[in-house]
Amino acid sequence: MKVLWFSLSPGLADAYLNNNYEGIGWVKSLERNVQDKVELSVAFYHHADIAPFTYGATRYYPIKQYRRGKLSKIFRRLTNGTEPDSDINAFLKIIEEAKPDIIHIHGTEGPFGLIQKYVDIPTVISIQGTIIVYRYKFFSRISRTDIVRYSYFKSFLLSRSFLNVYKVFAKVAEREQEIYSHSKNFIGRTAWDRRVTKILAPAAKYFHNDEILRDAFYKYEGEYNKTGRLIIFTTTWLNIYKGLETILDCANLLDTSNLDYEWHIAGLNPNDEVVRIAAKNTKRPISKNIKFMGMLSQEALAQALLEAGIYVMASHIENSPNSLCEAQMLGLPCIATNAGGTNTLLEDGKDGILIQDGDPYAMAGAILEMNENYDQAITYGKNARRKAQLRHDQEKITDDLLKIYDAVLNETAVLELKGNS
Image 1: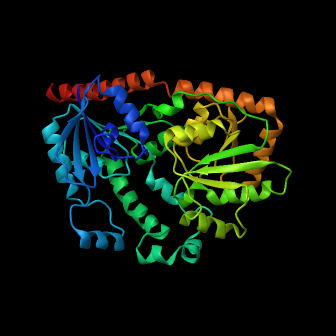
Image 2: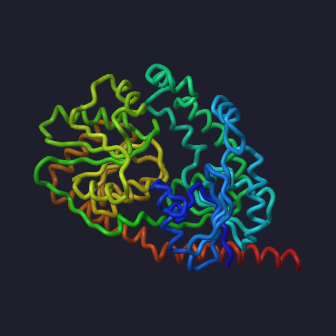
Image 3: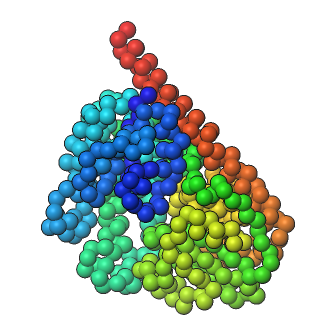
């Protein structure tokens, strides 16, 4: 079977390209498991103009992102531009060269799904997030006014403020709507993305397939540690809908209790703009117990999580956040906002605690409750790990994906036979 992926990540070719970026690590993990079972090609955006190449068992097709020069780059930034329509020609050229039996597109937020308007090759799209919905939750507590008042002036001058990000979201959502309208097959992981798909593409088929995590999180097992200072841990990113302001408010509430704790936040530095905006939004100083750890490698992140006692996810919207899955895989008791697809990952009262989105009081109370109930916290962590081990079983995920490919191909074959009869 010849399979062509379209992805925002070069996957295992990161090593060939000398990239140190560890994001979208699940693409690498999936590729490693699939590449010896199919004839795999991967098309991806890249900043440089590079010819197609083979690395390991996979054929790679780099797509030069934003083909025009510096003036065009400035214009795109000023106009909040997205990928140009002319990129479609590059996609079609790759398809013509790779000659796949099936196309697998990773994500609806990129432009790749538009190829379905021009080719009849069986195609399936994995849902990552759905920008159409994310846009509704973008300004959840941090408002447009907060962005205007608290962003650095340079961000507006360079058209890099979160208002500009929102405008890009609006354009991406419009394109995403078109992609959904042309799509016949989707792969998802949560009740949330299944329900969203039912509305956006009611005639499409929906297949369930979970994600393989990064390698480091299969190697270790932790346990809730009651001794000494409690370490609360969160992995987040540079977006205002990730709920950082809820964390800052929650920490200030915890500071009024007798809890001896530190809250370690990976993915952010103390001088990041989103930290400034969230802190200004709360109208209180950032707790001295909060430690921003910046970006961590997967190994460093796993080790940091193993030293923690509780994992907290504060996002206003998610589908199936790998950060939460990674914490569960290590056996941490978790507290998460009931946002998007998180209630598929975490069952309240069984393998963790779900709280209302944007509620620092419930978050602080859940942390104290978990800290005061040692045996219950251990049970949460063990249950979460067992669930995560089943959910992220690499062999099962790979086998399920190959079965999905067969189902999509066989459905197309049936339709072709009916058409010829």
